[in-house]
Image (cartoon, rainbow, N blue to C red; front, side, top):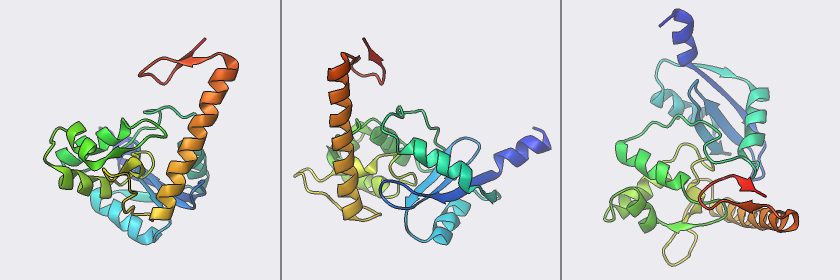
Length: 195
């Protein structure tokens, strides 16, 4: 690998941006987003990233992060369209992958997440992985609720979690209304539409 290639691999671009749910801190490597956090202490968030990505150089690029935030919070952005660079244990990555399969505007229980991650008995471990998700919203941990339907804790606050779920529910209704008016329909299991 060339020196320029190594330098690019060791670069983390970060910044703050607005979102429908308050200010976010976003950080990304050459592979994808490695942090999306609401509010909080920016220096603490970046210290966490530095621990997960040792030896990296951090560059603030607010303009690039604002464009990325607009894409992240656009309901029309398709699942998988934004690349992620997630670092965690094998089980955490399985849980985060399972979270990414939760449809927009829907919720699941912690038990369902554990089952989707391959270990029905690991509900507490799944809850721990949900709580340690470094990329809020893109890995939609806010869509996980208690089995009885109660909204459980959320690192960015219960009010923000409720706001996200309500916003997604409303956006989903708008999208369905659009499909009905235009005669377009979804193909089951895909993010594309057909006439």
